[in-house]
Length: 130
Image: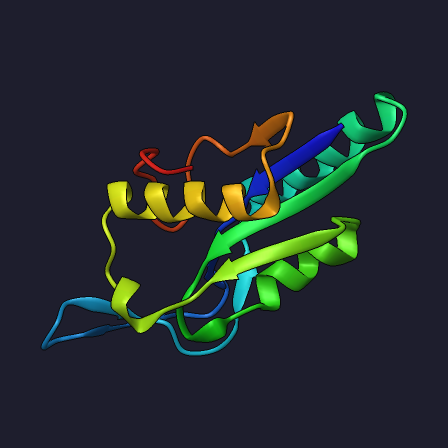
């Protein structure tokens, strides 16, 4: 069974961020971490692959500055491979753009039997792009 998990890397909630007063954007200083709900998704995908008698779990993510610390967590959990999309042109992308980027990343991995995504991220809570 081939499973792809969409994961989001978020600023560590334990580390206070700051707001850029000129852009009203959250300053993402420091490393990003794997969103908790996405970690549950990775674990579920690994369990499903095992229950199916084997398979491969891959992860896809979009993050700024080539940030991979959260993805490393998912890979350490047992995901076989990951695709990170990182481009300054994607900074501030809306939900639709993010969804399109993740869909293209999933195609790059190869069409899976199952795509797993969380209900929402814990840094935005919009629930529009899990």
